[in-house]
Image (cartoon, rainbow over all chains, first blue to last red; front, top):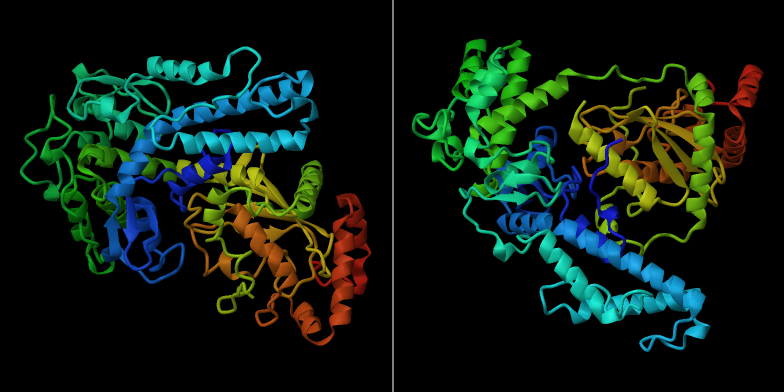
Length: 421
Length: 171
């Protein structure tokens, strides 16, 4: 199974809360082009909430009525998330190191009763007092460092090998050598720069100019060397010359893309205005449109007209979503027309390979076959019952759960209208 | 199937594992992340107390924009559960929100157990007893609680001899 980054990656509740607060409650990813709904103020990825609004005209969190005109790009949050994407890996590494050190030091306290000056009389350290000691220490560290921008590892944590004071220095040095450009101020902000940097998520070498699309794609596309222009449309065209799609990847902007696509072809610059959407597309009332008119809509956006009327509508609808969603991002984070078309194709491809629906036909047989699994689940559920309610466990996750239906609302209304008798 | 959907389900699983609500567990089946087995323990101080109720959740790639299909595998006697195990629960139908996750769904079902809505009955007999004959309702529920502890083979035997209509939920 694939692994996904998640607040639970962090060992401590405070960092989990931070990570959770920067994630969309619909998709669970770090916000991608966050928009705020005026009215209730809730935030979602633009794509997520635009997809939702196709079905329901309310806020997914609080159900206040809303519509696309109420969406406002949240550029401050976009910046914050961008910075957190850069910092997350380092913070995660440091938090884990801290946890390991703390665990090791507890072990040594318990076993050897080290007469370390910073410790209370260690002979009497019990597990619980050791825990409270750890908590206290951590608090002190975070507080004392709040003024400097550096996060410093547990000063004063007694380890068998290293002397307390050195820990932070060592880690700081490591950090510097591993990732010289990790400090936001050190990054040259010229988006056209040819510089290659390490991706903060996957560690691969990626041209600075394509780092955002790279991260947005889940670190799948490894950026090509800058000399070849990482987003070369011609390359894409050659690879898939047979399909109608690929011939379109290289084509210039749609009708809204401004002047004709003279930037087409080799040497095209990503930031060239004709390659990046700047105007919103309006929703169409497909029901009243003739086939020809719908095809026309697709043609205007340089989209293929393969498939039937249903396919055209679905394609145009989704293109509208991703097109308008990328406009909710800062200019430097926006997708080009070619990238949008690629994304649309990827989306259609995934839709196409539907898995054989794994419906369970025979309940009794299924239960028998999964008996072992259910026995394990019974034990697990029993264990969960015994532990005290995890109220204070993780404020971050509870941030999500306040939107969940049940524990808060005892009046779960059981629906009555469209029962399937 | 969509990668977004699978990533979301992986996160749901992580959340359910790191911060599980009391009396609830669940996990994707080993070979298909779109099908989950789940278990709810009947809440204390209700007729369902200590029952171990098995559920099956089936997702399609429109999740979380659309809710999964949820059904009880264990036999149930509850005003809002159909004979085939399907549920009548608003948040799994017209009150669904894409911000809900598996933990939220299972918590909702857990609280539905002790807080049924007899006004939208899926099991008319259970709803009527709940309104008019609480003692008999409790007796019937407790029978399903005991059924829920049985091994599948033992359950087969119970189902076979179940001509007396004791299990309102029997298909």
